[in-house]
Image 1 (cartoon, rainbow, N blue to C red):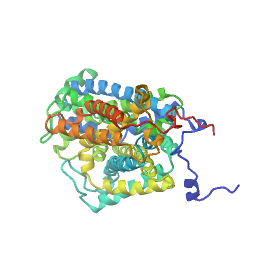
Image 2: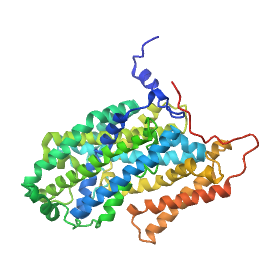
Image 3: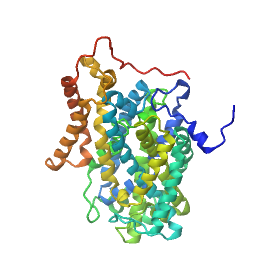
Image 4: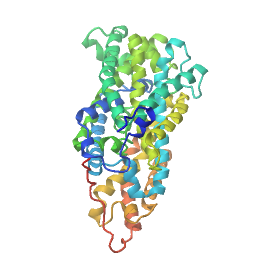
Length: 479
């Protein structure tokens, strides 16, 4: 057999099992998921989100306790929601949703899903670019920037975007390997940088830490123009900042490779290293930056890390951006590829990478990351509720799972009604009820469950004679 030498032949040979269960011999061990979660969530976002808690005036006690409770809830959501369903179906979110909702609805959802993932990956490419631009004295974004502020910024973003896209094009295996290599080093840099600057904040012993934390780092006083964050903001954000991944079921695309559903608990490696330690560490770095620069508007992760840890800090920002952007681009590629199974996933990922890189040129993605992360999770959350109820509940109520597939239909109105009503009610609660976007995920999930059950009861019709339910767990292929 002729050896595959060309890059195109290697890419064409990659099989991501987009429309079939994962073969048993392709399942991954704990290590793959611990690495990929640690890499993805100890990453570029941490250099942005940690400082934003400082900017929004979270107090030290609210931050520490809110992150603890919120991250525990996030890990439980990954394990008991996404992990269980991923192992039960062995399918991507996109193909599972197509079986439930039909190809016409899935087309709309996948485009929205891919677009949101592109913006998130773009924010991470921008984070990396803030570090790469340091030696070239490129003008860095501020909290008020929306548009690109220099040609150098655009060129830097495109260089980072090209590297990120190439890694994602090679599929799950390369994304996982990249994360496993990068994750251990990154968390060490986060911790070392934060510890290294403590004396500059007046912390010379363990006893000094808490008083200084309350008076200089997380003071409870927001910066000018920023809203005030409480314990509840911190807790719900920690829980729902990855809402699209866990209760929104996007991580079915990753956890379908897991041997057991309990591998969903491996998300703890990411959230407690990244969304706990790294957020605290980057908050410390940003508070020192504010004190020493006397400029509350400058907000560029690269220079902040460079001031604290030198070249190692700047390199950490670059790698951190990549390890978040890589799996996010991978998910976006799968979302678009599911529209037309004949498309090669690597070609789709290349296209998605271009769109993502263009989006990364706009600093507003980074400056409004807290709100964007909450928004994209809220938009995708109702379909996660639909999948959960469809897999576990409908048949117990005498209804049919995978209704679109069973009826050979391209559109299941119950799913569209659920998505629309849930988002409309959430907007109403936000505008007229005064409920901030960070808190809408919890009531929104229960609204989606109720609407989907009721609409399915009203819409589902008896199947033609001879057609039986096909909603049993998918068989894992042997090879």
